[in-house]
Image (tube, rainbow, N blue to C red; front, side):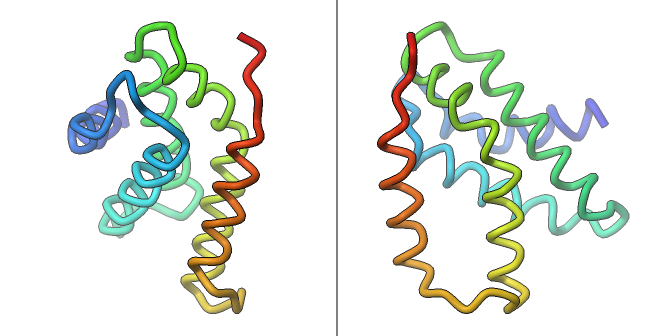
Length: 115
């Protein structure tokens, strides 16, 4: 699995920099979701685990600062965001995507880091 995590990390590495913000982190998460969707041999929880391992690797690779704080602060809610996006994709939730992402961004922008 480490090889897959490194492969996934390298595929999104260009999106990771010191100016990483919540919006970009959500973009990275959804991009990773699209990529792991192609791994048909893996079950859903395994795919989610891979995404979370890549997010953890992003946090490890970033220097101390605001971008690293964004990842650390946002990391605990990423599993729920993944589940929500999957539910929407399956048609289990009937929502307007633009409105939900706007709400998510608004909520996340209110998160204050203690650093």
